[in-house]
Image 1 (cartoon, one colour):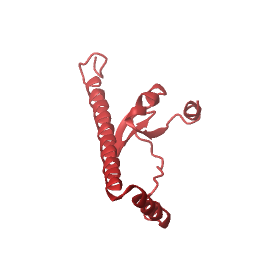
Image 2: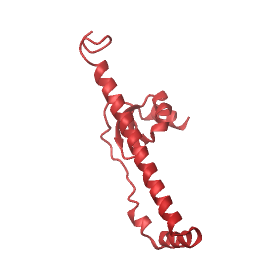
Image 3: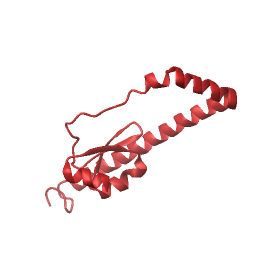
Length: 126
């Protein structure tokens, strides 16, 4: 309801979500436009908005004293190998999400080009 309410007030809206959430946003009128890392950029129009996009720089957080302390604690508790394995699994999952997002964006773009091809039933020159 919150997203529907926002779209009713701001008809040109853009979101970024993981590939698994694309059907939810499609049902609300969003179209997949592109992949940005592990996320699919979606918009209520067929082009990106001209608005600003806030992006959080996480690098300072990851290098903060608090995070280093938590990391040290987890290494002591779980062991160096377990932490290394967890970091590899995280990286593998992020790569997998990025591939899913890219595949979804490319598939949607290819289908859109096909539908708009002259001579295609329902296309631009039919």
